[in-house]
Length: 533
Image (cartoon, rainbow, N blue to C red; front, side, top):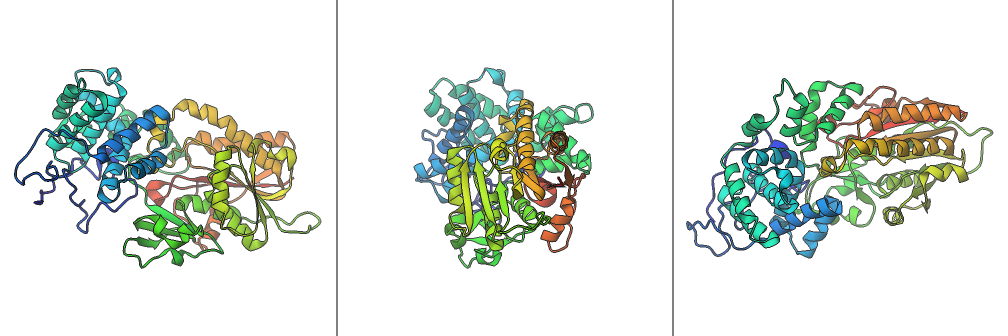
């Protein structure tokens, strides 16, 4: 197939609403020049077997990659499914691999990231309100918009295959509307067009950023508030939103005592692995399937963001006061919300190396099974309980030396990995999750012994899920006669990093806040607390 010249970026900046072009962490779709290799019909609109130079604008068949991407979007919408779980299953079912799998991933994740921007543009060229469209039709339009505006798929191919997809999945009725709307959308540059349809930046800065970077307005406001409250400049907000739209690298964690980061580096030409940036147990998989890494396949290493790794390392590194009157036996550690088991595996490996035991509690039985799988390769004394973390202190009051509360949260710190969370969550979720987060932290403070340490962590920087939860939990504990002090979490993190401070991680009130745009990690928040009586 002849080479089609690469058209200029339509983003007006790196990657537009979808961030840098990619497939949610998969790098296999790029060649050495940084361009995605040809796949049938992708650049020129040719179908397999079509004579070169003959352009066909009517596609009567829909390739499996586009069908899978559409099915993922419908599952996310109709079944509240998680894209990172449903997409791999669908790829396996359709036996898609290589370029086809990468293309399906790019389409699904690109739409989930850019949905807010694409909807604003689609609304500007449609003669019907988007709210009146069938949800399936809207997803077809979003897939077409992503191809037209943020990929190198030629406009005529993007429109024709979208019409064919609508006809196949929804019947002939909507195909005319899809054709008309996408033809109106084609031929414009994404960045300048977004600036044109977005609210005025001077009079409505939140609305402008919401459209330009494809985030709900309430999320934009919450992230701006979090930046300022945690000691950063509000001017970083656009960079943070852009980082949310950039596919996250695949980080690996070598479990202490079972593997070293050097073990994760590989001579396999199908893998590209480099050392991690921050975590002492990390490596980063830039290209390839993590299942090909022997240590991952054997359970001695796991796929885990560096920010999540640091949470476990910080708790393991915190100073715990000696038990009153001494005491026989090793320390008792507790992971209060252990599923699916990533942090529990790191903690268990640390505990095994010190002769300590770990109790991992998970309320959902199927997630408790995932914890058991995560801990299968780790030696030492480990117990996995199915139970409510809010009730642990009822049976085990003041007995644990170290407790992790990785609390359920909105996940707004992990939008790089779970882009659909921004559309699934609402401000009401903060009101629902807040009492649960406070109750779990209160249970941890009752379950830890005097002199022991609790780490409160969330994958969200939002104040309602971080500092305010800690403030309220400490006040409630004091009323129960439980006295708690805040530890210098940035100093403990520095000890994990060999004495070096992590720039920009100190968040005030002794906590650590990581950021995608500053640290290349999920926006993990962690605060260390010591019970004093």
